[in-house]
Length: 93
Image (cartoon, rainbow, N blue to C red; front, side, top):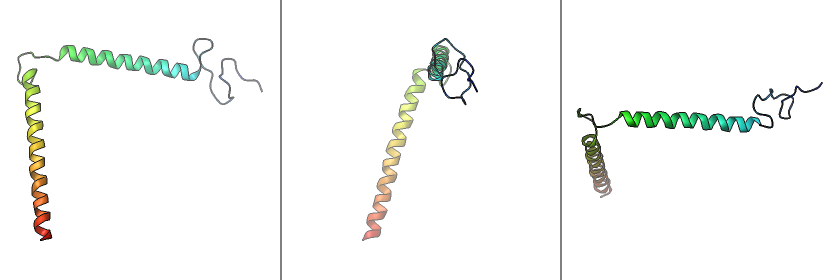
């Protein structure tokens, strides 16, 4: 049995459609690069649309709120951890 033209070697692999001399791996990396480029373009477009439009929850005010909330969570977690350590200390004595 003869293999169809355009295969990369093994008889069980389907024919590769692409530029002459390209392999399945070349096409996969080209497809992945195209997908990554589309994702980057979408992210750029979303970032351009997102901005401080004067509404509540946008821009610098939102960023400041995120940092304040993160600081409260970190401090609160440390207070809770100290309380648990105190319980272990009291339980050990």
